[in-house]
Length: 74
Image (cartoon, rainbow, N blue to C red):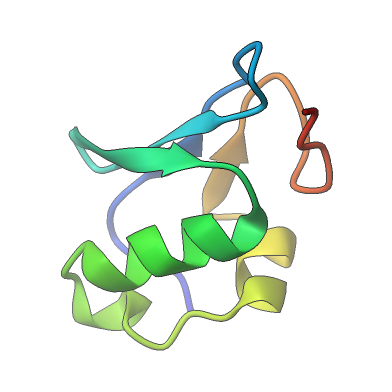
């Protein structure tokens, strides 16, 4: 599965949250990969409706900025 829209996870903020952008809109502030999964499911595109945590962690269609999918400082 590779969506047609870009997904960007921004660097962690001081509180550990990371902004999540799908296409041209920000969809939330994630504190875990499961938050990212939920934001993607709610984002609307049908190809993201069944995304799971392993999909997000391994996806080449997700751009992780500043830190990878396993880095969620608190």
